Image (cartoon, rainbow, N blue to C red; front, side):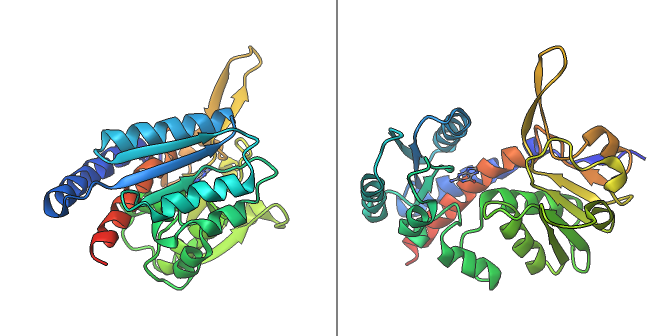
Length: 289
Ligand code: GUN
């Protein structure tokens, strides 16, 4: 049997259409245009691509987009001053500081400076705490996108064993919290976990977020499992050409899993769509305060 391919591209498109309607409604009902500020420090090429995409999609959906592209030498005081100014700007509802930051800037200090009501990344400890206590904070965009994709193939996740491979603050930990909130039995695996293949084989839902190309092999997957591959790794073929692959050996997994996301075109496109959803939500909350 071949697994169902879960298209993040298609789901992101329909989510964006829904958000576009929400943006138009908010403008019509309250005269408010959701505003997103994106801050990039330095010239990391991958971050530049992500930020350009975020700006483009924010504008395309009818939101206000502003950006601060700051030099790599920007001091902590200068960056915090930019964030303070955005915190008090009533036309800005969401603030995103692209990670990773240059080594001299402490991401924790930077994230904690963002007003939690504008923290559309869901990285501030206020929002992290709300997520782990089933409160109504902002949820990090990549795991939120993964949850949408999971629900597209299975509405009720209660009682399923979910294994999340990876414990980052951006994906692994918030993904585990979301799955726990959906009444899954959750295991978080990481680089020190022993017996990873057997553990993966016990997963009804397997989320791979480790950043190691094709690490998860076909025979690590339980027949019929739902596999979400968050990895985006560029690999080089012997002839020198490069291509993007996930953390899962996709071709092998396709024959065993029940449903699986491809790379590219899986959780990736959902991340920006969820950022826009969080920004719309932040704008809505600002008018109902
Ligand atoms: N770097 C990689 N993913 C993300 C993300 O979701 N948000 C931010 N701010 N930086 C990132």
